[in-house]
Length: 172
Image (cartoon, rainbow, N blue to C red; front, side):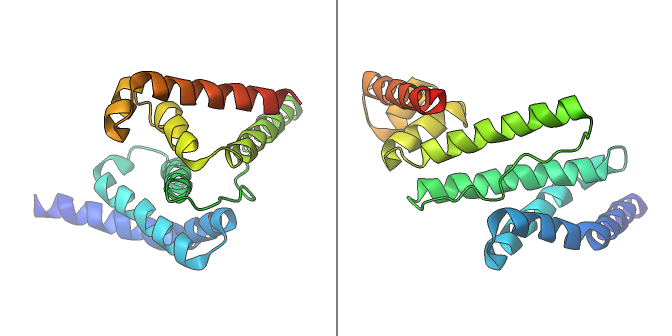
């Protein structure tokens, strides 16, 4: 059994050595600050370590990029939760398929995503938190109400107001 664990560790080390600089560069291009990028990169490699036994049979680059994306979004979500204004520069959708139609679709999605993030930054912090708990984390209105010690109808009103605001902003 020791030999198998050693193989996983060796594979992990190989992946780390091969991709760590790439991952760091990718993350810093999205978050801007070296300290934040190092923290996020560490989280990516912790995630990689936790699932190292599954890696040999999958596309490592795709897993790393997906982990990066998830950790970057967690980072920004935490920043928003702390009331820190978040810049969306560099959060564009990565374009992997270069066919013209797909490129146009992805650029349009990127524009819409940027517009949503810009509009979200205009919403009061508490309302934004409620909206993100519902739409990003998938919590029900009842769960959010219990968590924030508010009525279910108040939570529903905040989510509805946010949706109306976003729809109004995006139609312009």
